[in-house]
Image (cartoon, rainbow, N blue to C red; front, top):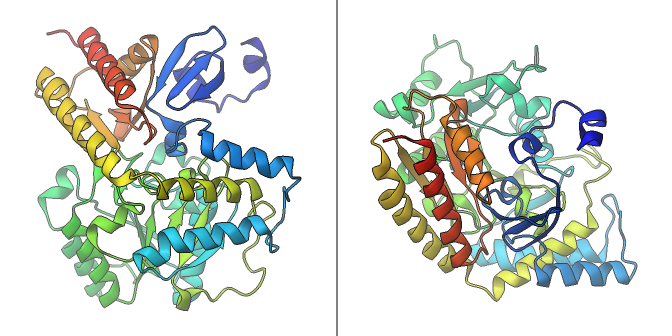
Length: 418
């Protein structure tokens, strides 16, 4: 690995957690050059809901390349974009009776977040944004300004103005009515906080430690925004595209955000792609007002269309529910009883094991490192990285899911002395 140490920036992180050289992957299995197999409970940080090298999606991409299809098209009309828009409208929007315009942003989720913030401020003619403690929205300056983790905001000096962090229902903040608190801030002329253009939220704070928002809380948040003329933006980058069961994670609350940010698994194959869904009356952009060279990823259009086609032939929601039940039962029956200091949280195919109450602050690192030694790739999240986050591809077969969970159990047994 000398070339990595010699030439790659110190900013790299995942390679330190998973110190092997990988060269091939299929489904939910990643193979190293040494021949060792790893079960993937990380799924590209949520970018691989359909697994690695999904056969149906891969063949569609290969066919497109073989036909010399357009590889780069800016925002010009292309057949690849046309087919994606038609399929997304058919499978997702029209079937759910949702009316959104689709803005293709730069290649990653943070680009779509930036577009959402810019458009919200343009629409409402107000500079303020409300975000939530524990939230994470990306690594560009606007997205960092609305992300809670101060450890990753070192370069945002002077750029976090006009952002107010509100309490998310977790920990101490569960002890009071957080929606009523937001309303009181808005109503109090002496609060020192002006009405924002928008409130951005995650239905599940994934990087925040797998914190699942209650349905009632989300419904009241929607109502609060309506009553106060505030736009509601849902960041569905990590837990959208079926991760919680339904295609959009907010569907379980029966609400409709004003804007929705999608990325990660929307392309179906791990290709860079991000979308901003906008209610039509809010689409007041002037041509070229928000631009970017790589906002028309043609291979991503092909992969995304194929993924949506595959969804039509596969009951993802029912399959996710079955695997959710297995994970819930396993974690509560096999992991939680290890210690009363362990907390279990999750929904669908995203679950967290919180070990924050242990005196060993490096316990989560010990456990995930032991998992890697035993053949499982799994990451940490949350405050002080105390949460072991289970995030496998949605298409993982049950035997691999069970084997991965047994590795977690073995790692806990090895790292926690009774």
